[in-house]
Image 1 (spheres, helix red, strand yellow):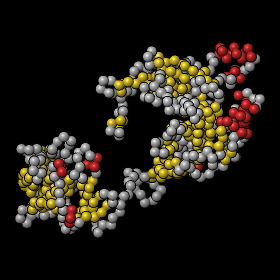
Image 2 (cartoon, rainbow, N blue to C red):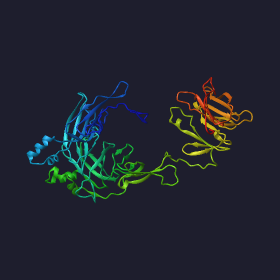
Image 3 (cartoon, rainbow, N blue to C red):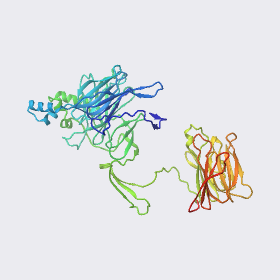
Image 4 (cartoon, rainbow, N blue to C red):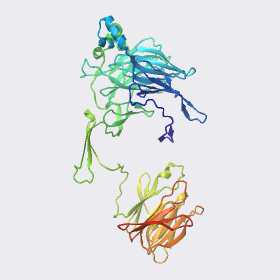
Length: 583
């Protein structure tokens, strides 16, 4: 579950195996019911577990005990959830079952074949596993043969808005399969002109996107990066029936681990090697302008030939009937964002080769093929430059002031409103908004003197600015000031949202505290510390409290003292330590 849309919280964490990653441990494949009622976790071999999801009386998600859908001697290649409306959840599995040793030896002896020849005749299948919510049981409902090279699937939208079923991608072909399908729907994949005729084009990733008015299309990517649009044509009178498909070239992208289409028309492609990219669709109706193949053309040639299914749907035959194209730059997609990635890192060197840096650099070799690169990593945090402003001199201190005019629940409460830059004899105030601009005396700040401390007060009580001549409070466009007694000057100061402490020449400490009722700073205590103060710091106010209980004060005699800010024990020394230099 997600808290506030930002942080993920673990609700359940069932243990699926205790002996590491094994082919029989569920976790390699995860498929969910589109209606959110159940999900299936599959292992590479044999084991499948189905979990039913519910909610308790408080509305929190709960997970039931797993239901087994195991099948012995079965290798699973992919698992997806079928959109079956509000009927019982169905999961599709692309799998094949291999014979045991005794069956293999017996079949080889009967047919006068070797064991390897018998194993090559194993048939891949797309199987439906149905979860009966009434009986709380999972059964293997339906299975249909798939292409021998099939390796991935993508479910279509179902229920009353779509045909349901799955697209099965393999080498040179994409096929549509569903329970009760009356005729075969398969289409050849366009090929590159210079691609070897005897070598297939393997489809590795597919995703389906639903448009308005019950329109569907899918994107499929080959192992060499070509992305194709698969247009699903539905019956004009029955949107739950597929009548054909068209496969058209869309663009060529780096091979991706997945394809994700957002509702805003964005395509995110996390690359197998190198940087990940976010693309925007410039156009999507490319069937009439791009190289395309249709299922009608493929099935028409198959029906007119005298070849069997196994003989016809091969890479050699696909190279004869499919259209060809030459890869170009992006035509229908536009890259709008790139997420840098160091994967895979094939070489690392740590050395100081720049010649003028303190820390060594990290040189890495990344990527593969056209996406390969040499990158230099340096120690430090990356920053984004928003604005550049020339300063009239060398600043002595910089303060950021938060926006205290917003409610605590408002996100703007966490944003800074001003940047206060202190110089030897002046203060520069910058306002933060869409742009960073300098503000003058109209802001209420004293700009003719340096600023020793500056912060926003709690409860929208304004902003406090400490300068050598006094303490200034700016609230709602008006300024009030506490002046130093006599000819004394403030040498250093520290403040938080409810407490201000200043040090005068001669070692006098004056402590102020915010009155929650009037919103004014009240002078609580003045104490001479017996030595000149060089620095100080008032602790931060923790959540749920109104004050910090301690402050640290550094003196010119190379000591640091911890004083109490607790009511009734103000400025009482609680500890001290000696240093080797002046703090």
